[in-house]
Image (cartoon, rainbow, N blue to C red):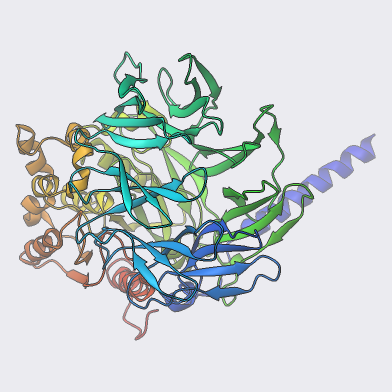
Amino acid sequence: MQKTYSSLIIIALLMWGCKEQAKAPREVKQYTIEQFFQTEGIGGGSFSKDENRILFNSNRSKIYNVYELNLADTTVKPLTSSGKESFFAVDYLPGTDDFLYSADKGGNENDHIYLQRRNGSVTDLTPGEKEKANFYGWTKDKRSFYYGSNNRNPQFFDVYKMDSTDWKPKMLYKNDSGLDVGGISFNERWLVLTKSVTSDKNEMYLFDAQSKQTKKLSTDSLGDATYYPTGFETTDTHLYYITNEGKDFTYVVKYNLETGAKENFFNTNWDVNYMSISEKGKYHVIGINEDARDKVMLFDHASGKELEMPKIEGGYIAGVTISPSETKMILTVVSDRSSANKYLYNIETKELKQLTKTLNPEVASEDLVDAEIVRFKSFDGQEIPAVYYKPHNASSSNKVPALVWVHGGPGGQSRAGYSTSIQYFVNHGYAVLAVNNRGSSGYGKAFYKMDNKNHGDKDLKDCVWGKKWLAEQEYIDSSKIGIYGGSYGGFMSLAGIIQYPKEFAVGVDLFGVTNWIRTLRSIPPYWESFKVALYDEMGDPSSADSVRLKNISPLFNTDKIKTPLLVLQGSNDPRVLQVESDEIVAGAKKNGTPVEYVLFPDEGHGFVKKENQIKAAAETLKFLNKYLKKEEPKGNLN
């Protein structure tokens, strides 16, 4: 017995030693930004008529184009060859090899739906000059598709049905009241309508196209619930929707269209993001946001029994597309150390096959880092979740600089998974703490509501206390911590260096809001149905809220910017206008502050083209090395 006990101790010590050795600081190969961006980004994955191919989009050509992948031999064939605008796959035209794709112009977000024939001819099906069109899905007979368009009224989306025989749109629902269509039954009798009330509450209605009657389905009595339809039963007997009525997290409700009876269909202790039913009703899929990671569950729809999903070594399933025959699935598999890949899974034989390898083979995944979910206490004791990336070479004897990374929104969430920019910065010696400050989604509605009309205050303090958490780590150089953010996160980055100049050594602002009054007044017209909710959360620029909005706007506090600042902006941004960045740069420069400005004339709200993504990341690293690491320039810093 003593010998066995001793042996167990030895084994335990050896295992502990191996684990510690695996975590031991080590130097890794540094890769250029060009090498990182040779990694491919892909999306989509709809099946062809014979289910032997899939349609997807990829940026392997340095811009997104549409491709077709042969499931038998994994060969890839390009179907479009755009060199200017990104094209995103929608679906094959049922029963044919023709397909639909969507594209905007220069990042203006006015997406159109295009039809491309197999011979290469292209037709813009939604050609309105300022039209924005969204594909909603196919009719049950697959001869027509539904889509939303603001061509009639720029403020609201009407719903149309377009027949594939003559390609003429027929209006199904005229939207004059800001009630957005969230779902259409297969027999077209029922339309589910939603209306934003506040950022924390909306209403949901059921419109009967036969009787022209509208029934309110949302029954929240506390005024803090949200409702979103996920789809109808294939027989049109039930509607499924997601709500957080009476609970902190969202769950699925099954609603009987005939009797009006409701039942709790699925819930867990995290937010349910979506639910979908396979084409013939054999399976349903539920997606969960589990502590900033995706969790996908497959069920037999009739029995409700959960079915086993394949285990993917080194990754996890983030999305599922079930074939029309319900015998195959395309799995989207993500990893912290590799961009998304597609797998083919045969539901009947359990055979699993990897279809893509998107990580640049020149980049060794073991040189990249896994994301770690951490939590820290903020100024008031509130626990704040974050996603953390630690460089392999960080140690108490080799302290590294760090960035507090702030997501967009308000109300967004930093998620674990692969990020080219984050892995690039970490590979070059920067720790990154992606803070999910109060007001972030994914942690329940109580947490989500904590920043309402308090933006740039307590949520910003969460980021400051994230910086303090970083400073407490023995391998972080506490004097070299900056703040980085895009969109709302860009505002937070600017607010951080203005309100807490001694906390952050540099600031990086990607298309951040600098003048809240102007931004809230100049939102895109198709945000009209959401405007009241947005004003409820941020404040109404035409009311007494304007005083607070001015006080928190970085533009009116540029005299306080003493910290080195990098600003990046797309000229065609419809949400945060270029003037926002122009003016903050001009104001900061008046202080003699080191300010660098990178403007992309062919981008909008976010950078899509690879050459621009490369430039943005390379310029950011050069800026960080100069002002945060304080390195001497070494020529090409890629």
